[in-house]
Image (cartoon, rainbow, N blue to C red; front, side, top):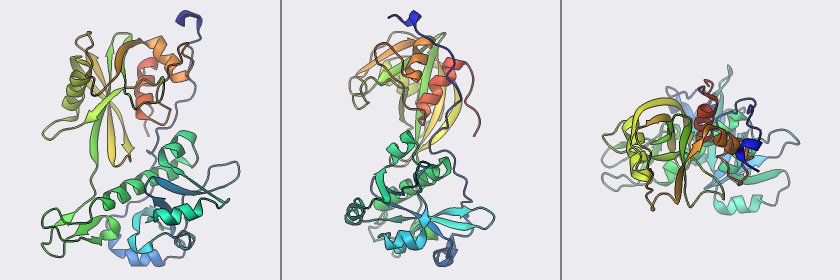
Length: 322
């Protein structure tokens, strides 16, 4: 069967961009009130142990990530290390994350009313609501930062937690440390009716995606997108157009998405970064999105920003706002 024999019609409703529906009031001016929030009987919390997230099974609908705080603590969540995610609704209900020891998580795995899984699987399978998925992304990134920031990088003293988990302070030298987010440029290079996709050895079988790389010091997002494309595929690019961004809590990044205009065509890959790169026609890229390619090739799942950048090219329109 050739590509010309296959249906390349509409893709249906535009999917939601994963991790991007954070709706809480971050309450940055009220984080000193953490003891009050912990005492609030309405407070809710999610439980995370490393890469493992604890969900409450809820029939056929989305599972629950945010549990009553008292229940989360009873399951082993460490309230002394809680981080405030924000306040929900007009009633300002506190939402937070409690870290969980791996041993405690293992003990919960046998409970039928609970599901223990990882954040990527939760997003791909749509196991929780969009809003709770965004809260989990924030929660996982915060705990990852705390796990890596126990001691002062200035003097080596053990740090103390402040501002509801949003700051660590050094009692010796007074240095203040704040959660960080690493910016990553992710880009789809376009030349007429073709786009450039690459394949990494760590990808799932048959998956092709956009190129991406971390932004370096002293570099704009657009410069990073052009540099990474040149380094990984030897393709020179010109105009860069921003489309959308996505929190990416693996462990704590934000993906900044661009379309780049190609200024050259010949591909020479960096073998340390990619195992393949090639040009895909618009119609073939559509088959990757619908997972109907005759060779079994696929694009990243709908929750990923790469899917949205490819779809924007295929359909000739920008992703919907929000």
